[in-house]
Length: 434
Image (tube, rainbow, N blue to C red):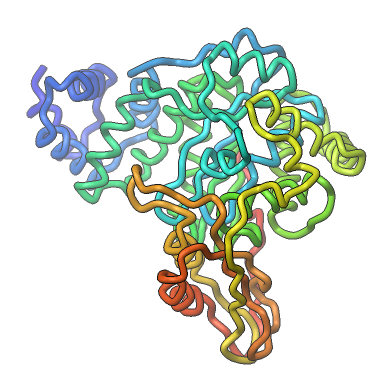
């Protein structure tokens, strides 16, 4: 078998066999196939696409390229949850404990933030003492003890994806639907969950800018799950504005705690509840939507949801008092009010630019080794469709370094479109697949 023949076959739009995909992928991971040949194959895939069988085969090969996680020692059905990323998406920090409080099991491996998309691990590490690096033995022990644990991915999990993504990033081939699906699902398959729940975002703050693209990606990933024997469900959700009000690490933890304490409403809570419903249904904790909603409502009202978060924080070395006193979380030295520049209605929000304003303040990173400040970020006080008056509070910036304030402020203001007539927003949950 020769790599040049595999490249040529895909250039002509033919389907690659499992053996051909294995030859190319294994050779690349083991450094027997050079970057320039794999780049040619990836570019051919970008132009010609992959059929469903190819995509599923590539995904399973990528999943098997490194370590796989064995969660069989954890009691019950483990449902893995994944979001395709966005701004102010704090769902995992609340959905995990809420699911566990209702009787489910959540053994979750998460990642760090890059660019405008915040990472769950960075948010959790803003809790004093919280350790995201846990041995597999401690990981399973924590889940068996309290029903939920969220840790960092092991370095040897799906090395093929790490190497392929770095190559795609520098060859402008990231936006291939099949390669995106294989990248996400290979990590989920290697993660050892019994079932998978996906939150596929679309809009100005998502990788998929249109609903149709997000829906297509959702269908591909659900089908990959079916072909690999893992029941998978996907919610297609709106990211045309920040999901929550808080954008920044400790601020987002604060908002998650407020929701688990039953003190906050809005889109973020709505999606947290909806995702938890599906977690309970997939985990066979509830047999109906009505039962799942009853369990969730009870957990939020009786305090068991926030107590479950406290328990997880304690078991992972953090300070559980933050759930009772959010002032124990990192605090910025200054809070700057951002007023509305005109009268009208919020008709559009360039959500990725809101995220970039938070990055400029120090809440995110543009390169993997960039430091972040857990205390900084911003808190939105107006949402899409809201009326505003000139001078009225749009947001508060939580700032440490005032040198970057003007740049962040300008970016934020340009991202908010104020019109003369109100405009209706999209449905938060646009579709459910699987």
